[in-house]
Image (cartoon, rainbow over all chains, first blue to last red; front, side, top):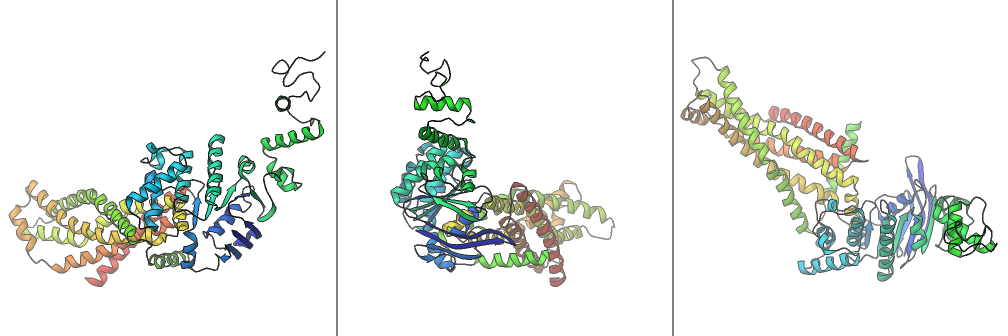
Length: 297
Length: 245
């Protein structure tokens, strides 16, 4: 469990974090969402020690990371795995060498044992053996993320941090990465914290969601509660996504049986087909002359 | 003010390098890799420039020594001393500033910008000790060796050019080489090469390690690293010459 206690961070005179309090539980995908400049990346960097906070605490299972000395911090860092936005793979090393690096540095295991562990985690992230000897520049963005994830989990971390794991990926690959993170979190019962503004991820794996706005925690909940939230700032953020806007409309239609007037015709027809009902009373389910049954006239 | 700030940051970085390594084997591996990159990687260019510098020195010295009362052995003496005292250490190191310095600055800058250094920090690795220190140590080991090679090749190049151009007979050149030879000149050149090696590796490492921004800043820091290390190298050359000669 990680607890953030009244965390503040200022750069010169600009306050980026204005006293954040939040708790991240074990075995859950904890998402930090928010628009660009909301302070979520600074919050994550403060948590892993890349930025020193101005004040406040970051407690790893009760131990305050901020006030620790370098030796104590090292013991915590050995329990941390991090997946960076760009992967942060070492350019001069192959996929296999990248994943083996933490084992080389922190264990005295024999080469065969390390190789076996590398194979195990690379298989876990569904990477084929033919790519093991390729360099990061020779593999796709999705594969790079998977290698970075494999490297992050190779030492069995207790805490997994993921900074924008889906940035630059297509929706299908994003979904695969999301599912992998979720499965790994549950499998190893680790505390996973994900920085994202991908609403697909939020709806898919958001066990616990923290919404950041201008350096403050604005809202907290899960992926079932977020869509019904009355928080205006949160709604402005999440309903910028057409997918969620339509999800909310669908829910409104199911509850009230009325179609919002501003709904585009294409979306309306798609919803009619999904619900198999003629909502607008035009005598067709979906677009006229397509899938819908003939009108009763 | 900026110079003082940068100097302070450099001292801080240097102080951070000396901590107990997480795994000495990995640090040794990194040191050997850097020895290969800096030493073997620069071997070709050092060989080429040394031979040509020696050759040009012979031709130009012979061109200026037109008096019949000056013996031909003087050409060899002048070539020997200029190559050992100045051309081999200083000129080679200025070239190495460009070759090695820009490589170190851009490599570390790229690692910083692409968050590779952050990834190492989060793993609990002392990045200054793991990334910067092996480069400086590798420079201190390999650059003096390269300079010694440059001395030998420079003189050989001068002998070759003198013979090929019919300016000086090889036996006369060899006689001149051992006349009034001061071993102290070689020690002086080696002292210079150690100081230059530190400048060539530490200054670009500092600029590369502290890059902020993106690809453009990597280019800027690389250029700045080469310029600053060249200026410092010439300054050190002057100070050492004034103090030790």
